[in-house]
Image 1 (spheres, rainbow, N blue to C red):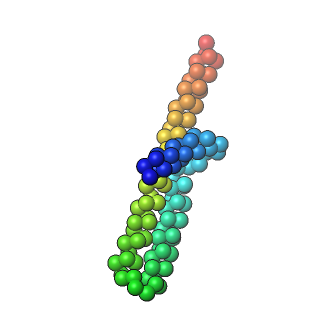
Image 2: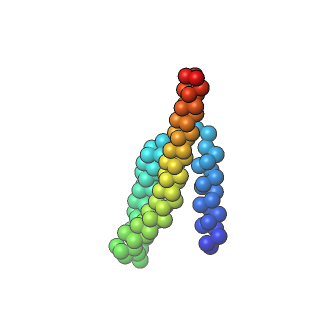
Length: 104
């Protein structure tokens, strides 16, 4: 199970590095949070509709689902933010070299 989790996180790392378009990390996290919250609310509503489930299960299961989904979403947010910062540093370094070359 640990190997599956490690493989999934490595896959997320590679996919963020290979993204062609610039995705705003904040926009991506906001969209993901909205989707996760909607899924958690829907699962809570389904749990409350099933006979035999207590009110505690109605809140615990969506809470666990939310926590299990928010961790990878936050990981991807951090990767995108780091990638954007690295890209900006490279871009600034290239601009400095070009400006230095043009001056001399």
